[in-house]
Length: 414
Image (cartoon, rainbow, N blue to C red; front, side, top):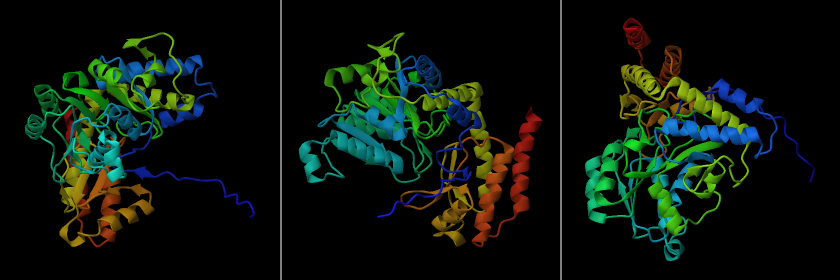
């Protein structure tokens, strides 16, 4: 068989206008490309990790010592957090979209006994796990959580904060309060809210474990570091029961970030190989996020999402989401059923919008790292062009006039 050598791979720029990942900031790319070739225990690499740890504490709004980044994607951070769930543990998980659904499957796998796995290896249904499925397009409420936890009294409770599968924000305060009231250890998927919403995790004592991702609100590269933060209560549970992993071990992983026995140490201990390139990119992404300011960034997302929301409504769409980084919508009645066609045509032109990944099929338009009038206008024009290609009748003068009024109001207020 002759060897096949393909031409060099060229990947063009696209506008990532979906739920994530977002378009990486040029400063992050420069930091990644500009990092020198260095050993993973080289002093500057370790210093960068220590500084990332402290910046993450500021971003999360916490004093948790066990706050660091898990190498990989958001799923890596979630796997680390959920590793504390052991076979036979009682768990209640609230699901209201594709990604909390994947979290729910992960929980069922981790809480399953050998018998559960043998009965259904890819989709186990352990009796000790209760999955509460909330209808698509609805949020998890505190009242809902309190009622279920009062009934089941689980060891662990789980919820996604922001669910991009449906574009819904769930009740974090209600979830934390219910966990405290009913003795559950709360775990939260903050993949889509960290770096976008203005919240401090120390304000939610019912939650003991948090996991996020590198490529949404933090806007680093997808394969870098997934932020996690664990309370002393969570760490005490891990030390008591252990976890069935090494790479994503919540305690062992922290040693390389200079956290040992719940204390910061001057000399980190080796756990596994880290990338100096990834550390440089993650460090710069955190600097950018903190320079923007958590509260200001949250206000900016809300302001620009409102502009896009009004624009797509003016095109005849119906918005069902309440997130500020993502608009989830139904197309006008005459285009219903053509959501995937519209998305495919848009993506072929470098406009990366997404459909929902489960029923009902909707369109998702994200604004990660697109916080300007020019960016929102560009997204609006591209989406309108895609709709009109399918036959939509859109008054672009009206749509663009609405955008102009929205941004003129901000200028006048300044």
